[in-house]
Image (cartoon, rainbow, N blue to C red; front, side):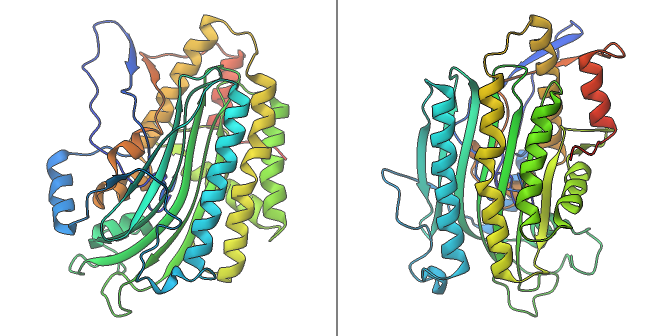
Length: 395
């Protein structure tokens, strides 16, 4: 994500490994993760984070008892209902409601806990987490509408710009920004039911056109990707077919382009493998008509439920062994590695003083690291790993 697949994060501390060659990590439950997402999850050094955040003077969030009609500032000219900002906020809040309703129905017991928060100068969010349900170990679905000021290095993190590039002048002043998004990560209990991540976001800089390293501009980003522990081909094909159908309504080049982008982005470079079996991913999109991109992001976000819920309904009660569960935990370890090491949203959130609880909700409750684990060649586990190392075309 360009700004946060959650847009916030915190330092992340792992206890020292035990003498055993197998380490089980219990991640502290968290309540929410901010969705100005990509996807868009942070880690960082506290002293550096403090220095950056203090330089930006981002206001501390304030808990609220009720959801406001809008998180847009009263003085924001975009508060008009026909503005892109207003329509995007309306869309992401509708998607949050629809996805949460579908997840509660599929879980059959768990209910989302909701936190509403705001910032005194404008902006805020709604964070919802279902934890320890019948089907879902942890499911977070969050929206946020954020105003702030970021230093040039955070602008580069949002844009994925190299520090030494012409667009990343280190001497540039603080850059005002607006960011809104919906972000979600869903971790089912059953090893045969896949994890899902989706994030759709809209970003604007409010900097004057002549601001060094940060021209005034807008862009859309987002994507939906599937992370199974086992390959059930009909499920993966259904998921990718749904993504392709949404893309094809706008441009037949979108699905192959964004599918490859997803494969490339969600690669754990130090492992030489993808986090999962992909989907679609796009970022920094402003080279098409703004109305078209708003409609495209809406179509993709509305496709989450039909892409995922039928898979969950089929797999949530599949019998599994302890060996299956341990493999799922190992794959969740990969999920944690990607989110905390590579996700652009994590970097952006750290540097903009994002809400700490919001990002950690993207992580599973438990994950596992086992020394030098290699699945037996030809096994179902090996087939999953092979697909993660050698991306396939599913439709």
